[in-house]
Length: 353
Image (cartoon, rainbow, N blue to C red; front, side):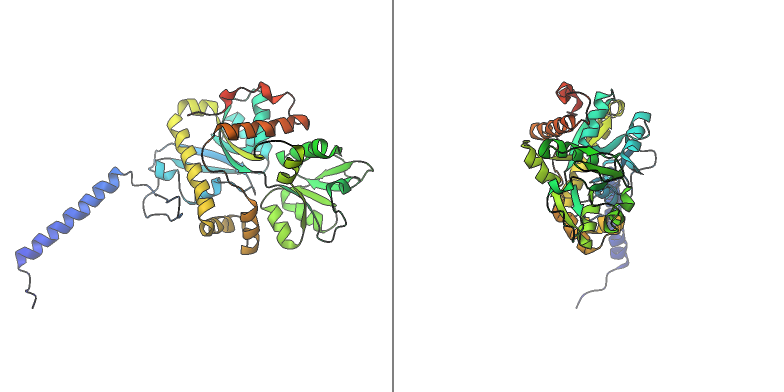
């Protein structure tokens, strides 16, 4: 039979409990009291956000364009490092470039060729990471009689003309297929005519017969495939046809040079958080589906297609990735997008920490 505790025993037990709670609270305060996310699981532990008064890091992305920023935001990965995150979702890539130029954002995820163009135009930015490889594609309707890229001659193609996706399409057509692209809203023999279509309308334009094909990125490619459209040519396929070496880089993360000089610790924290987000994306399909499904209103069929088509890059910049970026820049130059040979861009544009 267990003995009842004396009054002093109960008091002693209460004191021990208070001391344990106080010790846990002290440890929590020492650890920063921030939300922590496990990169392998994506499970957020119960904790407070970054403290009021902490540096707010602003990051810009394209509205409707997927990136690791989606995971960074949902999983509060910068909060766990003592920083606040403000996400700017802008309508067009030129809007992102303008935000960088005006100092309205600190970081941005943009097409690699646009980073080169900014640098060639004198922008003070540093490339801090590769986010993902090319996942864009040329889509046609499932019942289309267009069977190969050369069949696009004389056809009308819808594209977001202000995007890097379109600029690289022009380069692929010129270098890999020796075909000419013109921006005209009418079909003309011997050339590919391109008409500007907003991202939100581009799938309708294809499936209502307004255009014969479209050039677009994720998640729109997967939405089209789920609807019954088919890929005429993927960008990685066209990359291989050019004979270029390395990986077909699509998106890179850049930071304003003045911000990097003033806040090197914040830049390193952002780079670490982006890598953690990339690892969550790669290792936790369920959590990634939750984030992307909620943010972009995608069902499981579309998410499965998207997940299998998207190659997220983990790890920091290295010599191999830098060579791949430079190969992509060469493609953009040969396609007429970059005004000068990108070999003149110094290695100092790549952030070393």
